[in-house]
Structure formats: C-alpha cells, structure tokens
Image (cartoon, rainbow, N blue to C red; front, top):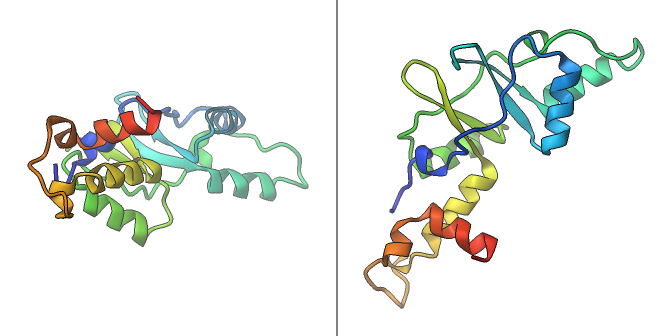
Length: 163
C-alpha cells in the first residue's frame, strides 16, 4: 500500500458534538477524551463545524472577567471547516497538515456526512507503516511485500501496540 487513503487512516467513530451542546459540556468532552477538537454534526451527521481547543481557549480567556462562558457549541465553533474525502491519499493528507494549523481533519462523503477523522498522529503512524515496508522504500533488503506489509496502517498500529 504505497499511499493509503484517508479511509484507511481515519478513526471511524470520533467523538462528535451537536451545535446545541452546551459549551461547558463540549469543553469537558475534549478534556476527558484528551483530544484537540471534535467535529460538529447535525442530526443527519452532516459536518457543520468544528470545535477545537483553540476555540475553547478563546472562549475561556474572553470570558475570564465576566464569569463562566455560557451558550452552545454553535456560538463558538469554527464554521469554515477543512475536510477531506475518504479517497484522499496519505501524502495529500500530510500536505494539508503541513499547510494548515489543523490537528484533525474530518473525513466526509460526497453529501458532507461525517465518516471519520484523521489526526496528525494517525498520519504519522501511517507514514511509519509505509516507511517500514522496504519494498516501497527501496532499501537494501528489497523484497516483495508480505501480507502484513500490504496492510500498511493496520500493521503499523499493531507494532505500536506491541502486538
């Protein structure tokens, strides 16, 4: 697998938020899950925004003198969300991460419905999986790829977990 697709890299069921989720509940979710942001979806699972740690920091600092921030996610989320399709290749995903400050990219279908999410860490793991495949990288021990190497991200994830 020389250039795995976003569908191979993505977390398939990332935590999501609704536009009407109370902002404090959303901040708690990000902190509890230790994630840098979450897609905001409508009832049909269409991507309508993204709430990042940075958005939350802006909220909390702006409200520092006025008390605890109130309102829902819709009032604070970023609406200009960059997303990718499930067929976007690893190298295009990495290029997007390098060109933008985003740490996570939602993966959407042609109707804008959320399919999953690719993180920078997931891209790094995939690069490592591709890099470990000497057949693709043309290193001294060039050999036809094994079944495990052809799985790319799956095999890299197993190695990372020590399995």
